[in-house]
Image (tube, rainbow, N blue to C red; front, top):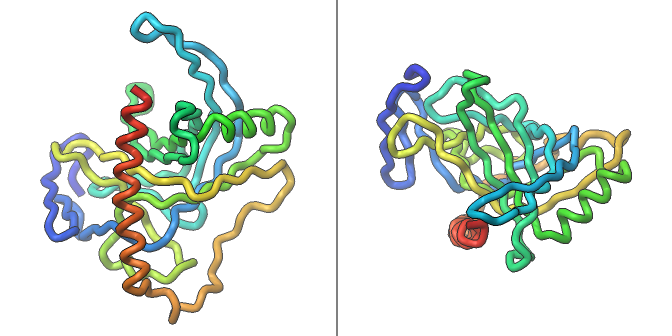
Length: 237
């Protein structure tokens, strides 16, 4: 493993990513959803002055972790045991979609850095969740999303319900991890006292390998994911 902060040579060829210092090759397009659970939810209000304009920066913060699976960084040795969680409202014009952004940020006060999960939802969803948190009806969030995270090539055909390791990619400069993006499929909240969602292991392995249609549908989701993210980035500027 290459030391933290060092430059790693990264190569992309035929959909495979190789990273200096890692014995694995990585691929995208695993036909399964990423599952997150977020708790310690609280609404944080406030305003920010940007470009001589006052902006409402109200958000929901908490802590997130993966359900069964693992989140790591290609070329690095660390793992996300818990992540900072932030949920923000999208502009009204972007209603009808929700975006997930996973990243790793180096911090001066936290030398080991920090994983972060950010979600952008339509204003109506944000307001409903904020009300649920205030009333005590939302103690925990359960989220599923399709993402452009990487997996080891050897795990590409892993059966549904069997845990896998997801990886953030590496930026072209080879020094820092690249963020991953996703489209939120489901977002549900639960009050305190309800059982934590358990990973499912009852799928039939014989039915686990995606067929051709499944792969085509996944490719279309990946294309839609990139296009939607670009539109959202433009809207947020």
